[in-house]
Length: 96
Image (cartoon, rainbow, N blue to C red):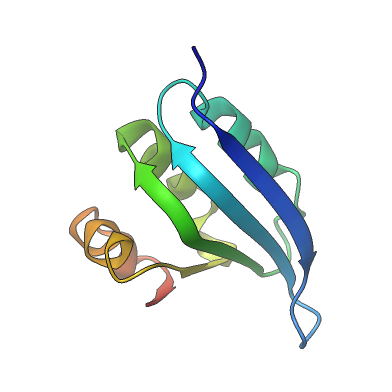
C-alpha cells in the first residue's frame, strides 16, 4: 500500500522553480518523488519545500542525492537535522 504523498509545483518570487512536497516519503512512493525531482531541468536551480513532509526514510533521502547540485531544500525544524545527519548539508543548501 502506498503512503500518501502529493506535490505542488510553482515558482518562487525570484522565478526559481519550486516543488512543494506534502505527506510522507518512504519506499512505497520514493519513485514518484524521484520522478517529480527529475521532471525539472537539471541546468537550473530548484527549491524543494519539505516543510509539510511528516516522514522521510532512506529511499526518500536517496532520491535527493542525484539532484543536489541544483537543489535548495527548505525543511521543518524536525526534518532539518535528519537531512544534516544524512550529509545533505555538505552538498546543498538547507534552510530550516
